[in-house]
Image 1 (cartoon, rainbow, N blue to C red):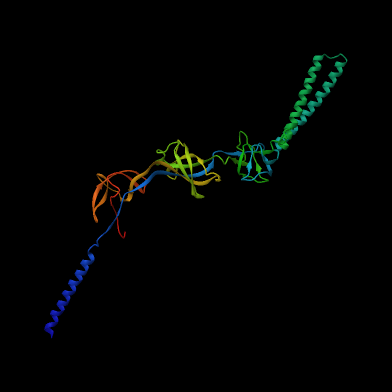
Image 2: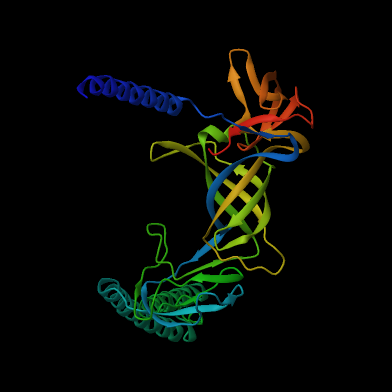
Length: 361
Protein backbone atom coordinates (compact mmCIF):
# COMPACT_ATOMS: atom_id res chain seq x y z
CA UNK A 1 0.00 0.00 0.00
CA UNK A 2 2.81 2.37 0.79
CA UNK A 3 4.53 1.65 -2.59
CA UNK A 4 1.71 3.52 -4.43
CA UNK A 5 1.50 6.50 -2.06
CA UNK A 6 4.68 8.33 -3.13
CA UNK A 7 4.14 8.08 -6.94
CA UNK A 8 0.57 9.24 -6.52
CA UNK A 9 1.57 12.28 -4.48
CA UNK A 10 4.23 13.18 -7.03
CA UNK A 11 1.72 12.87 -9.89
CA UNK A 12 -0.79 15.07 -8.11
CA UNK A 13 1.88 17.69 -7.39
CA UNK A 14 3.02 17.72 -11.03
CA UNK A 15 -0.58 18.02 -12.26
CA UNK A 16 -1.21 20.87 -9.89
CA UNK A 17 1.98 22.63 -11.00
CA UNK A 18 1.13 22.27 -14.67
CA UNK A 19 -2.43 23.46 -14.16
CA UNK A 20 -1.29 26.48 -12.15
CA UNK A 21 1.33 27.39 -14.75
CA UNK A 22 -1.20 27.13 -17.58
CA UNK A 23 -3.69 29.29 -15.67
CA UNK A 24 -1.14 31.99 -14.91
CA UNK A 25 0.12 31.98 -18.48
CA UNK A 26 -3.39 32.41 -19.79
CA UNK A 27 -4.05 35.25 -17.36
CA UNK A 28 -0.83 36.96 -18.37
CA UNK A 29 -1.79 37.07 -22.05
CA UNK A 30 -3.00 40.59 -23.05
CA UNK A 31 -6.58 40.64 -24.30
CA UNK A 32 -7.13 41.50 -27.93
CA UNK A 33 -7.66 45.26 -28.34
CA UNK A 34 -10.29 46.67 -30.68
CA UNK A 35 -9.89 50.29 -31.79
CA UNK A 36 -12.68 52.66 -32.67
CA UNK A 37 -12.47 54.53 -35.98
CA UNK A 38 -13.68 57.99 -36.97
CA UNK A 39 -14.25 59.44 -40.42
CA UNK A 40 -13.28 63.05 -41.28
CA UNK A 41 -16.23 65.45 -41.25
CA UNK A 42 -17.17 68.93 -42.46
CA UNK A 43 -17.00 71.63 -39.78
CA UNK A 44 -16.84 75.37 -39.18
CA UNK A 45 -13.65 76.16 -37.30
CA UNK A 46 -13.24 79.45 -35.47
CA UNK A 47 -10.03 80.48 -33.74
CA UNK A 48 -10.69 83.05 -31.06
CA UNK A 49 -9.36 84.60 -27.91
CA UNK A 50 -11.41 85.50 -24.85
CA UNK A 51 -11.27 88.76 -22.89
CA UNK A 52 -13.03 89.25 -19.56
CA UNK A 53 -14.45 92.55 -18.39
CA UNK A 54 -17.73 94.43 -17.92
CA UNK A 55 -20.34 96.43 -19.78
CA UNK A 56 -20.12 100.11 -18.80
CA UNK A 57 -21.40 103.43 -20.19
CA UNK A 58 -18.98 105.18 -22.49
CA UNK A 59 -19.08 108.32 -20.33
CA UNK A 60 -20.04 108.59 -16.66
CA UNK A 61 -20.36 112.17 -15.39
CA UNK A 62 -19.89 112.93 -11.70
CA UNK A 63 -21.95 115.94 -10.59
CA UNK A 64 -20.20 118.06 -7.93
CA UNK A 65 -21.51 120.91 -5.74
CA UNK A 66 -20.25 124.47 -6.17
CA UNK A 67 -20.52 125.33 -2.49
CA UNK A 68 -19.63 123.43 0.67
CA UNK A 69 -22.42 122.60 3.07
CA UNK A 70 -24.95 119.96 4.07
CA UNK A 71 -27.39 118.09 1.83
CA UNK A 72 -30.87 119.40 2.70
CA UNK A 73 -33.02 117.71 0.04
CA UNK A 74 -32.52 115.04 -2.63
CA UNK A 75 -34.81 115.34 -5.65
CA UNK A 76 -33.78 112.23 -7.60
CA UNK A 77 -33.04 108.54 -7.08
CA UNK A 78 -30.76 106.04 -8.88
CA UNK A 79 -32.41 104.64 -12.00
CA UNK A 80 -34.34 107.84 -12.68
CA UNK A 81 -34.05 109.55 -16.06
CA UNK A 82 -32.97 113.21 -15.89
CA UNK A 83 -32.40 115.97 -18.39
CA UNK A 84 -29.66 118.60 -18.35
CA UNK A 85 -30.60 121.26 -15.78
CA UNK A 86 -32.91 119.07 -13.68
CA UNK A 87 -32.61 119.66 -9.94
CA UNK A 88 -30.82 116.84 -8.12
CA UNK A 89 -30.19 118.21 -4.62
CA UNK A 90 -30.37 121.30 -2.41
CA UNK A 91 -27.43 122.28 -0.21
CA UNK A 92 -27.63 124.21 3.01
CA UNK A 93 -24.57 126.40 3.47
CA UNK A 94 -22.67 126.34 6.77
CA UNK A 95 -20.35 129.36 6.62
CA UNK A 96 -16.79 129.27 7.82
CA UNK A 97 -16.43 131.33 11.01
CA UNK A 98 -13.31 133.21 9.90
CA UNK A 99 -14.66 133.98 6.42
CA UNK A 100 -17.96 135.12 7.92
CA UNK A 101 -16.20 137.40 10.44
CA UNK A 102 -14.03 138.95 7.71
CA UNK A 103 -17.02 139.55 5.46
CA UNK A 104 -18.97 141.22 8.27
CA UNK A 105 -15.98 143.46 9.14
CA UNK A 106 -15.59 144.47 5.49
CA UNK A 107 -19.30 145.34 5.26
CA UNK A 108 -19.02 147.53 8.36
CA UNK A 109 -15.98 149.25 6.88
CA UNK A 110 -17.78 149.98 3.61
CA UNK A 111 -20.77 151.35 5.57
CA UNK A 112 -18.44 153.85 7.26
CA UNK A 113 -16.82 154.83 3.95
CA UNK A 114 -20.24 155.24 2.29
CA UNK A 115 -21.55 157.44 5.11
CA UNK A 116 -18.49 159.65 4.84
CA UNK A 117 -18.86 159.87 1.04
CA UNK A 118 -22.52 160.88 1.39
CA UNK A 119 -21.68 163.68 3.86
CA UNK A 120 -18.88 164.93 1.61
CA UNK A 121 -21.13 164.90 -1.44
CA UNK A 122 -23.91 166.76 0.39
CA UNK A 123 -21.41 169.42 1.49
CA UNK A 124 -19.96 169.78 -2.02
CA UNK A 125 -23.47 170.04 -3.49
CA UNK A 126 -24.33 172.87 -1.12
CA UNK A 127 -21.11 174.72 -2.04
CA UNK A 128 -21.82 174.20 -5.72
CA UNK A 129 -25.33 175.64 -5.33
CA UNK A 130 -23.72 178.72 -3.73
CA UNK A 131 -21.27 178.94 -6.68
CA UNK A 132 -18.44 178.29 -4.23
CA UNK A 133 -17.37 174.97 -5.89
CA UNK A 134 -16.60 174.14 -9.47
CA UNK A 135 -18.60 171.59 -11.48
CA UNK A 136 -15.47 169.48 -11.85
CA UNK A 137 -15.05 169.13 -8.12
CA UNK A 138 -18.73 168.25 -7.70
CA UNK A 139 -18.43 165.62 -10.40
CA UNK A 140 -15.45 164.08 -8.62
CA UNK A 141 -17.44 163.98 -5.41
CA UNK A 142 -20.28 162.15 -7.18
CA UNK A 143 -17.85 159.60 -8.62
CA UNK A 144 -16.43 158.93 -5.15
CA UNK A 145 -19.95 158.44 -3.79
CA UNK A 146 -20.82 155.93 -6.54
CA UNK A 147 -17.60 153.99 -5.89
CA UNK A 148 -18.38 153.76 -2.20
CA UNK A 149 -21.90 152.50 -3.01
CA UNK A 150 -20.47 149.80 -5.25
CA UNK A 151 -17.96 148.75 -2.59
CA UNK A 152 -20.75 148.51 -0.06
CA UNK A 153 -22.89 146.39 -2.44
CA UNK A 154 -19.96 144.06 -3.17
CA UNK A 155 -19.33 143.57 0.54
CA UNK A 156 -23.03 142.80 1.13
CA UNK A 157 -23.04 140.28 -1.75
CA UNK A 158 -19.93 138.58 -0.37
CA UNK A 159 -21.52 138.26 3.07
CA UNK A 160 -24.72 136.83 1.58
CA UNK A 161 -22.72 134.42 -0.55
CA UNK A 162 -20.88 133.13 2.52
CA UNK A 163 -24.07 132.85 4.57
CA UNK A 164 -26.46 131.47 1.94
CA UNK A 165 -24.32 130.32 -0.99
CA UNK A 166 -25.76 132.82 -3.49
CA UNK A 167 -25.32 136.49 -4.21
CA UNK A 168 -28.14 139.00 -4.76
CA UNK A 169 -30.10 138.08 -7.90
CA UNK A 170 -28.44 134.64 -8.10
CA UNK A 171 -31.72 132.74 -7.42
CA UNK A 172 -29.86 130.30 -5.15
CA UNK A 173 -28.07 128.78 -8.13
CA UNK A 174 -24.96 127.81 -6.16
CA UNK A 175 -26.91 125.91 -3.50
CA UNK A 176 -28.80 123.85 -6.07
CA UNK A 177 -27.05 120.86 -7.62
CA UNK A 178 -28.38 120.28 -11.14
CA UNK A 179 -27.77 117.61 -13.76
CA UNK A 180 -25.11 118.68 -16.25
CA UNK A 181 -26.16 116.17 -18.95
CA UNK A 182 -29.22 114.15 -19.84
CA UNK A 183 -29.19 110.45 -18.99
CA UNK A 184 -29.85 107.97 -16.22
CA UNK A 185 -28.88 108.51 -12.61
CA UNK A 186 -26.58 105.57 -11.89
CA UNK A 187 -25.75 106.51 -8.31
CA UNK A 188 -26.52 109.11 -5.66
CA UNK A 189 -23.76 108.40 -3.12
CA UNK A 190 -24.89 111.03 -0.56
CA UNK A 191 -27.72 111.20 1.94
CA UNK A 192 -29.70 114.03 3.48
CA UNK A 193 -27.68 115.60 6.28
CA UNK A 194 -24.31 114.58 4.83
CA UNK A 195 -21.61 117.23 4.52
CA UNK A 196 -20.27 117.92 1.03
CA UNK A 197 -17.26 119.85 -0.24
CA UNK A 198 -17.32 122.18 -3.22
CA UNK A 199 -15.32 121.46 -6.36
CA UNK A 200 -12.50 123.94 -6.90
CA UNK A 201 -8.91 124.15 -8.16
CA UNK A 202 -7.59 122.55 -4.97
CA UNK A 203 -10.27 119.93 -4.30
CA UNK A 204 -12.12 117.47 -6.52
CA UNK A 205 -15.24 117.92 -4.42
CA UNK A 206 -17.87 115.47 -3.18
CA UNK A 207 -19.79 113.52 -5.82
CA UNK A 208 -23.51 114.12 -5.40
CA UNK A 209 -24.69 112.09 -8.40
CA UNK A 210 -23.35 109.99 -11.28
CA UNK A 211 -25.12 110.31 -14.64
CA UNK A 212 -24.56 108.36 -17.85
CA UNK A 213 -26.18 107.80 -21.24
CA UNK A 214 -27.23 104.14 -21.09
CA UNK A 215 -27.83 104.13 -24.83
CA UNK A 216 -24.08 104.36 -25.50
CA UNK A 217 -22.38 101.32 -23.92
CA UNK A 218 -18.93 99.80 -24.30
CA UNK A 219 -17.24 96.56 -23.28
CA UNK A 220 -14.22 97.34 -21.10
CA UNK A 221 -11.89 94.45 -20.33
CA UNK A 222 -8.34 93.13 -20.34
CA UNK A 223 -6.37 90.93 -22.72
CA UNK A 224 -3.26 88.92 -21.94
CA UNK A 225 0.01 89.98 -23.55
CA UNK A 226 0.26 86.64 -25.38
CA UNK A 227 -2.92 87.51 -27.31
CA UNK A 228 -2.69 91.28 -27.72
CA UNK A 229 -0.34 91.04 -30.71
CA UNK A 230 -2.97 89.16 -32.72
CA UNK A 231 -5.82 91.63 -32.36
CA UNK A 232 -6.38 95.01 -33.96
CA UNK A 233 -8.94 97.81 -33.91
CA UNK A 234 -12.04 97.10 -35.95
CA UNK A 235 -12.20 93.35 -35.26
CA UNK A 236 -15.67 91.94 -34.46
CA UNK A 237 -16.54 90.64 -30.99
CA UNK A 238 -19.18 88.26 -29.69
CA UNK A 239 -20.12 89.41 -26.21
CA UNK A 240 -21.81 87.31 -23.55
CA UNK A 241 -23.18 88.96 -20.42
CA UNK A 242 -22.96 86.89 -17.26
CA UNK A 243 -26.56 87.67 -16.33
CA UNK A 244 -27.83 86.84 -19.85
CA UNK A 245 -26.03 83.61 -20.70
CA UNK A 246 -28.47 82.60 -23.42
CA UNK A 247 -27.95 85.79 -25.41
CA UNK A 248 -24.98 87.05 -27.38
CA UNK A 249 -24.62 90.43 -29.00
CA UNK A 250 -22.04 91.98 -31.23
CA UNK A 251 -19.37 94.58 -30.70
CA UNK A 252 -16.47 96.19 -32.51
CA UNK A 253 -13.01 96.56 -30.99
CA UNK A 254 -12.10 100.25 -30.98
CA UNK A 255 -9.24 100.64 -28.49
CA UNK A 256 -6.19 98.65 -27.35
CA UNK A 257 -4.06 100.18 -24.63
CA UNK A 258 -0.49 100.92 -25.72
CA UNK A 259 0.74 100.13 -22.20
CA UNK A 260 0.29 96.94 -20.19
CA UNK A 261 -0.31 96.62 -16.46
CA UNK A 262 1.21 93.87 -14.31
CA UNK A 263 -1.65 91.98 -12.62
CA UNK A 264 -0.89 88.90 -10.49
CA UNK A 265 2.29 88.13 -12.38
CA UNK A 266 0.80 88.58 -15.88
CA UNK A 267 0.85 91.67 -18.08
CA UNK A 268 -2.67 92.73 -19.09
CA UNK A 269 -3.72 95.27 -21.71
CA UNK A 270 -6.96 97.23 -21.48
CA UNK A 271 -9.33 96.99 -24.44
CA UNK A 272 -12.60 98.76 -25.22
CA UNK A 273 -15.26 97.84 -27.75
CA UNK A 274 -18.44 99.54 -28.90
CA UNK A 275 -21.45 97.38 -27.96
CA UNK A 276 -24.70 96.87 -29.87
CA UNK A 277 -27.21 95.35 -27.40
CA UNK A 278 -30.30 93.50 -28.66
CA UNK A 279 -33.28 95.67 -29.55
CA UNK A 280 -35.32 96.45 -26.45
CA UNK A 281 -32.84 94.81 -24.07
CA UNK A 282 -31.68 96.91 -21.11
CA UNK A 283 -28.13 96.18 -20.00
CA UNK A 284 -27.23 97.38 -16.52
CA UNK A 285 -24.00 99.26 -16.02
CA UNK A 286 -21.13 97.26 -14.57
CA UNK A 287 -22.41 93.73 -15.34
CA UNK A 288 -19.62 91.22 -15.96
CA UNK A 289 -19.14 90.00 -19.51
CA UNK A 290 -16.78 88.02 -21.71
CA UNK A 291 -15.86 88.89 -25.27
CA UNK A 292 -14.85 86.35 -27.92
CA UNK A 293 -12.55 88.03 -30.42
CA UNK A 294 -12.55 86.10 -33.70
CA UNK A 295 -8.96 85.84 -34.93
CA UNK A 296 -9.55 83.53 -37.91
CA UNK A 297 -12.35 81.29 -39.20
CA UNK A 298 -13.04 78.55 -41.78
CA UNK A 299 -16.47 77.38 -42.92
CA UNK A 300 -17.37 73.90 -44.16
CA UNK A 301 -13.81 72.52 -44.19
CA UNK A 302 -12.71 68.87 -43.81
CA UNK A 303 -11.73 68.28 -40.18
CA UNK A 304 -10.93 65.66 -37.57
CA UNK A 305 -10.73 65.69 -33.80
CA UNK A 306 -7.37 67.16 -32.84
CA UNK A 307 -6.88 64.35 -30.31
CA UNK A 308 -6.52 61.89 -33.23
CA UNK A 309 -3.48 63.71 -34.56
CA UNK A 310 0.01 62.37 -33.74
CA UNK A 311 3.45 63.87 -34.30
CA UNK A 312 6.99 62.71 -34.92
CA UNK A 313 10.16 64.18 -36.42
CA UNK A 314 8.60 64.27 -39.89
CA UNK A 315 5.48 66.09 -38.80
CA UNK A 316 1.81 65.28 -38.15
CA UNK A 317 0.22 61.96 -39.06
CA UNK A 318 -2.78 59.75 -38.34
CA UNK A 319 -3.32 56.01 -38.51
CA UNK A 320 -5.82 54.96 -41.19
CA UNK A 321 -7.56 51.56 -41.30
CA UNK A 322 -6.25 49.56 -44.29
CA UNK A 323 -8.04 46.32 -43.29
CA UNK A 324 -10.26 45.45 -40.32
CA UNK A 325 -8.25 46.53 -37.24
CA UNK A 326 -5.12 46.88 -39.35
CA UNK A 327 -3.80 50.44 -39.49
CA UNK A 328 -1.18 52.24 -41.54
CA UNK A 329 0.52 55.59 -40.99
CA UNK A 330 -0.81 58.41 -43.19
CA UNK A 331 0.93 61.79 -43.35
CA UNK A 332 -1.48 64.72 -43.29
CA UNK A 333 -1.41 68.47 -43.77
CA UNK A 334 -3.35 70.51 -41.24
CA UNK A 335 -4.64 74.06 -41.02
CA UNK A 336 -6.70 76.03 -38.52
CA UNK A 337 -7.52 74.56 -35.10
CA UNK A 338 -9.98 75.68 -32.44
CA UNK A 339 -8.50 73.39 -29.77
CA UNK A 340 -11.06 70.61 -30.39
CA UNK A 341 -11.30 70.20 -34.16
CA UNK A 342 -8.50 70.78 -36.65
CA UNK A 343 -8.70 71.47 -40.36
CA UNK A 344 -7.17 68.82 -42.68
CA UNK A 345 -5.87 70.36 -45.91
CA UNK A 346 -4.31 67.21 -47.35
CA UNK A 347 -3.71 63.48 -46.83
CA UNK A 348 -7.25 62.38 -45.94
CA UNK A 349 -10.52 61.82 -47.79
CA UNK A 350 -14.10 61.75 -46.57
CA UNK A 351 -14.29 57.95 -46.51
CA UNK A 352 -11.09 57.26 -44.57
CA UNK A 353 -11.39 55.56 -41.18
CA UNK A 354 -8.98 57.16 -38.70
CA UNK A 355 -7.78 55.17 -35.70
CA UNK A 356 -9.21 56.40 -32.43
CA UNK A 357 -9.12 55.15 -28.88
CA UNK A 358 -9.47 51.54 -27.86
CA UNK A 359 -12.94 50.34 -26.97
CA UNK A 360 -13.62 50.23 -23.27
CA UNK A 361 -11.20 53.13 -22.51
